Amino acid sequence: MSDDKLVGIVLVSHSGAVAESVAALATALAGGGATAPVAPAGGTEDGGFGTSSELIARAAAKVDRGAGIAILTDLGSAVLTVKALIAEGDELPDGSRLVDAPFVEGAVAAVVAASAGADVDAVQAAAAEAYSYRKA
Amino acid sequence: MLDAAFFRHWLTSAAALVDREAERLTQLDSPIGDADHGSNLQRGFAAVATTLEKDAPATPGAVLTLAGRQLISTVGGASGPLYGTLLRRTGKALGDAAEVSEQQFADALRTGVDAVSALGGAAPGDKTMLDALVPAVDALGESFGAARDAANEGALATTPLQARKGRASYLGERSIGHQDPGATSSALLFDALVQTAEAGRE
Image 1: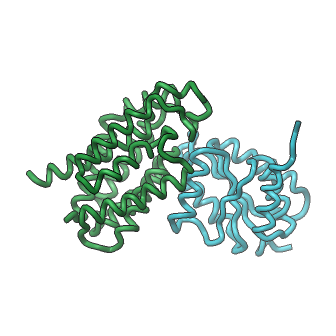
Image 2: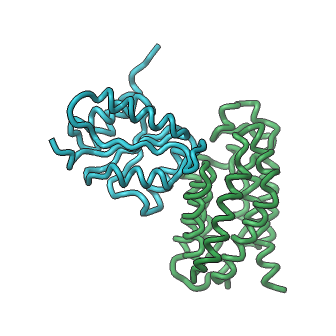
């Protein structure tokens, strides 16, 4: 199966290690066969904690297959930076959107859905639905 | 009328003030934030000053738009997209005019402040930069000096407030009694504005 039409997933965390680990976890849990393109954008460019618009833009360009990009974030500046990039700039590919979802659970749901060929609306819905799963 | 040189001077002055006050901003950010506000803004505004010197955009709108973009890409904390949106949206509102009136600038800055409010979902009283920006932009039609005074009073008035946005809000009532670093740095923008206007008159 070609991944020409798969939705791309970008995972933005304050920590590079968190973004990379969640990307690896979500890809592993998406199981066999082709998985949707996933790119982490964690921390700052010099490896510190924080948010980098450059890393986000690079990750988005890397996973862009023309079917839209679902961006999941952790908190604070990660959320605000993605919102600012989408509202104001031309740094992100067309069809990029911030998805309101819990970071880990949402990432798994988004990668599973995108890997099954879901469109960006369905990927967003799958990720957001992770909020409704109560743990206690 | 205010031209591109005025706006470049303004942001360069702001960069110098942020540099001077960076340590104090970080100290304010230590009890209620993550102790990086001064260093983050210092890095961002230094990049703005360098870029404006190198590129020297020809219109007020282009100066502010470029500066905003630079802040978003270099600050690395929440103040980057917030200040970046403030300047970029203000710049877009000014369009391509070679010169703008003080009233046009005041109107454009209000558009920028509204965009900050929308981005962060905050309102005055939440103990954020808006507690300085909103009173300042309200007074800007009167004079730059009135805006500076309103911004500084607004920043001081954040001390008894309980934070309702950002990391400080996790502290609940323990955020009371600390002046908000974002409101404090916002007031520096208006200090720089007055400095720039006074330098132009000399």
